[in-house]
Image (cartoon, rainbow, N blue to C red; front, side):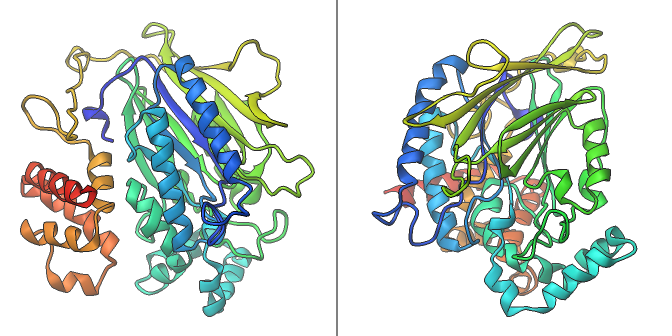
Length: 434
């Protein structure tokens, strides 16, 4: 969702999920799927919580959507995400997600054992950041490193306009906050060299410096999503310093234990798991609601973050224990002096049900546009792109279909046919529903 085209509510409110671990031929397909009752309990609890937050803008997912990175696991995940979006009343395309170690298809690594040699070389390199960048930018080595994440990217991440690939392993998106400043969401890929050999203190992972290069601006508040916390990373100290200096809110998964802490002027949350392993000593499924807004005048601005921690206790989800009253805890983070220029203080264009603005000039909600297109059948996607002459046939042999289709939107913008493309997508979507 492009910030300049988004409506501006009083607060931005998200459901935060992590470590869902959908399992092929089990989750939602087997009578032995005992976690289905947990998902049902989350659905019930969220529906009861909505009146306390007024609305939900979307879902933040900090990795491990799948259990083994299989296509079927992402199909199950998308169906549940769509159901959950309906319950909270947000558009099904408003999902911001990153991959985790369970989103890696380890069978691909088994078939390509040289990948393990690459991982070992990176971990032992004098300058692992340089070596990682060199490999990711390589014509053959870059795509090879991303093969274990192919299913995650094509079946989940790209469908929510959260692409991750060798050209850029992270993504960014922007939303307007209530004072017309920007909430910039940055999704990091910490699973680049993840495998069955991962160990916190021995076989660490790596982000690469490029992923945590923030651009401080007075009117921008960063929200970072990453699966692995810094202590799991080779470059974790550098990542920690960059995040604690520039990213006001940081969401991590992986550890299955909830914890939050203020570091400098930032808030770091280590989330619990929707589906933790039941053999864990403390098995406590969790999810969160997060409410974000700006308070104060131009010279006393604060980013106010309300966190609603929900935890499973015996028979139901309840408020997590802690030194706070009511349903949520509140943290306040100081922001730079800033005031919206008069030209930006006007109401943002109102988006109609078809995803475009009401009135002229026509503007588009990119996130909704990409999601609707990516959910269409392949033949319908291809037909739309051909109708508007948005790619050359020879391109299909040089880049993946997902990359091809995403790049086509930029060409549609250049050719000034986005409106027509959107209407075609909407028409195909209705056919698929019939």
